[in-house]
Image (cartoon, helix red, strand yellow):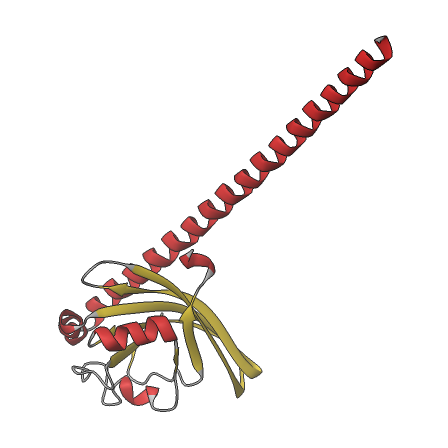
Length: 197
């Protein structure tokens, strides 16, 4: 009888220990999940701040860009770093905003090409979308900039851009200012699945 009681106590202790361990694991996993969400939210906030600042910077550089923004259904801004060491590549993050609802979709971009130069360049690209179709096609399906993307930026100069080309207007800014010709050919824009959970 005493031996049986001792075994029951040991079994109860083992079960209790198992419950404590599994409970701790669940708490740890929950903590990890909370931590990951906080990290995602921090990244979203930084990207949103970058986007809002890019839009503000663009308006200070071009009155016509601000006028075109008023006609746009939505907009997007991306911060990019491009590095060239015989083969050029770059990547960055951005946000697309529906002006009517204020909904934000977090996105990413990447580019790869052949280049003879060496060095790096950071720049910001701002898109305006003429209508709902062009906006949602960009956000939901992604967008691959081709050689025609240069024309969308307005080759006549930064203040010549007052219309949309194929539903999109594109502006590129560097630390030196707003650039007249945007060469974003080969750049792929797509949803950032991790940040849109």
